[in-house]
Amino acid sequence: MTGPEYSQSSTYYRIRIKGGLSKQWSDWFEGLEISSEKGSTMITGPIKDQAALHGILNRIRDLGITLVSVNQVVPNCDAEPAQIGKKRS
Image 1 (tube, helix red, strand yellow):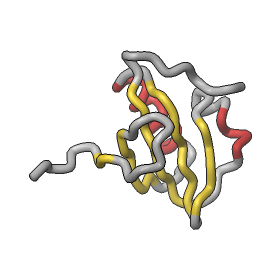
Image 2 (tube, rainbow, N blue to C red):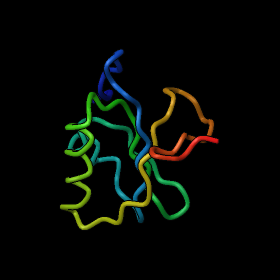
Image 3 (cartoon, one colour):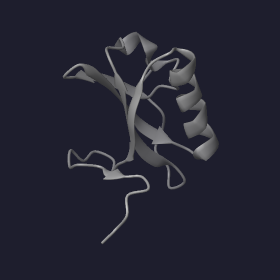
Image 4 (cartoon, rainbow, N blue to C red):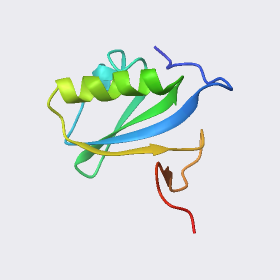
């Protein structure tokens, strides 16, 4: 699977979880990209709406995995993500 399609109505997210998770889980996480980085796993890609985001977060909870962060990011950008709910100065 190549991953979900990005559309104007989708928002890109980077979800960090504690520990390792094989790329084979990608289909279970709706085709989102899975990569490992320094003792954690990043689940990244377009999520169409808040209900879909909560569905992904529920799957993480159901697996008993520790959620580290959820960040909204710009597609195809390696810059630091803007944290959701972060106060702007």
